[in-house]
Length: 130
Figure 1 (spheres, rainbow, N blue to C red):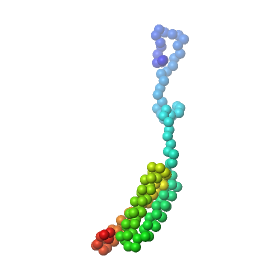
Figure 2 (cartoon, one colour):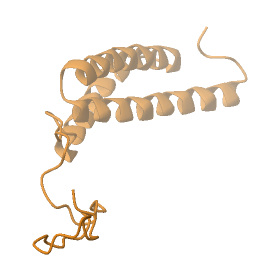
Figure 3 (spheres, rainbow, N blue to C red):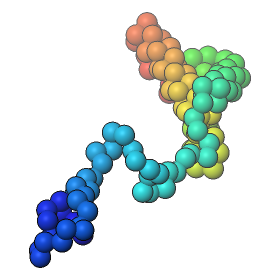
Figure 4 (cartoon, rainbow, N blue to C red):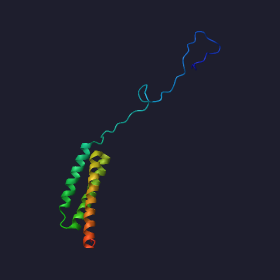
């Protein structure tokens, strides 16, 4: 190994080479030293939109089954739980973008049901769920 200094004893045929430097990584000098792993199913906007649209339709169909505020809220809670179970399965074995859309819209649907419940409770002074 050469350090850039003359060797002892002095060898007139020795070639001067500067010490090798470790690259900073700003400008890679070659292929990465570790493998690069890519996600097999990346999250896309189309997947999120598809999951959101499906969850919206699902919550709408279940919400229309309710005849009053209490039954609307309970149907929405049940539909949301089923949607979240589906999203958990999709996260594990399917498309995570669709699962994200389902989770986002289900959270929004539960928020709407909670707002309807709060307004009804505030106007009637009676808890509507029991």
